[in-house]
Length: 339
Ligand code: ADP
Ligand code: MG
Image: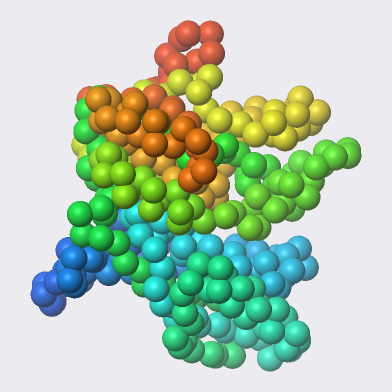
């Protein structure tokens, strides 16, 4: 292939990140983790690490202005960052917010976005400390950078899974993907609960409390949030840990609403749960001998629920035991900009 003519679509989002990863570090002082996890990690300061993450939302790529109310858009732009803080076991401290706004955008929309962001700051106890404002040709763009903290002894990375670990997820999967299909007009349920699915897509609740609970327990080995899809993000845990996974189809948690919808509209709910993405649930692994202790700690459901999915195995494949008992190798694919 002619290197000069190669485009982003030839290598995909993750190929691109691999390419730019080298030679990014010229100050190793306090650098614990650079590119490659849900957050970058620096420190320790006293007994804690600082963790940093950023996410970009672009009109017509991540949201359609007519389909989301501005307050919810402000919340979502914070939530997706909070989810990456949760994935390290951390809590948020401070944020910076940059926006690029078309000249014609009504002030009302911006006020709504900031109202949503500030409500989120109040609820989760963190600040907006600054940012940047620019004009944009015709699309609205929102970038949030968030810094958080996590006790040094409790931090969870995605690359520390070990053979034999049990795999868990923090909640039902696939609702957000169903909501996106409805927004795109690809799924048209006759009646019922569209609002539930659209909310799951537009306002995915960040699992800060749950993530802190897992981190505080000290029992887990690895954690990630599900943004690209269960198989893709389990793939990230496996690939960075040099291992594989076996999950059980019958264990994949689906909401009652999704089960009902899948019979009404006739689609495979598991397909959405496996590959849909943007669930923003936490996926983590726990050594088998510590699993019952963790389950005991979460028994009352106060800090969330644990849904066991399967186990970490040797190799580099993700296998799924189907409901009828046969085992199938899953293709590791998920959301990837440019592909
Ligand atoms: P997540 O889904 O958890 O937000 P991403 O898949 O977006 O993570 O990114 C994977 C890793 O690559 C992260 O460590 C992120 O900080 C890094 N990364 C993504 N895009 C860039 C970029 N343009 N420049 C430098 N690092 C990047
Ligand atoms: Mg993430």
